[in-house]
Image (cartoon, rainbow, N blue to C red; front, side, top):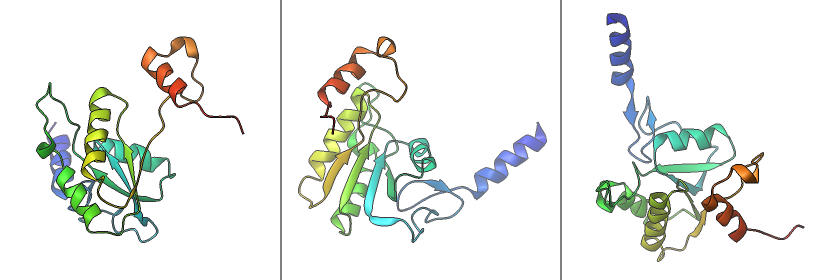
Length: 160
C-alpha cells in the first residue's frame, strides 16, 4: 500500500485547479485555456470537471469551458454563492464571448441552475444556447422514461 500512497500523493502535489475555468490540470492556467486553437468567443458551462472531460473527449466543441463546481440544490443546501457563477458572470462581463453553451445535466437541479445562469447573464450581448435533450442515438422508446420522451416530443423538428 505504501507505493500506491506515494503515487497518489505525487499526483495530488502536481495537480492544480485552473484559475480561469476551474478545470483540473498540471498547470495553471490549464492547457485548454491556453490553447490558441480554441475559439475564445465560445464558452461551455458545465457542472463538474468530469463533464468538461466528457465533452472535450468528443472533440466537437471548439471553444473553452467554465466549471461551476456543482449545481444549485435546495435539498442539498447548494446556493449560487457556493458555485463559481459570479466568476462566470465576470468572464462574460469582461467581453469577448459571443456564445455561452449551458451544458447542465438533464435533472431538475441542472435545469434550475441553467435558468438561474440565464437570468444572471440576460443583460449581456451573448447568444445563449443549451445542449439538446431527448432521445439518445440507438435508444428504444419502450426503455425511455416519461421525462425523456416528453422532452423529445417538445423539441421535435421538421424533417428537412
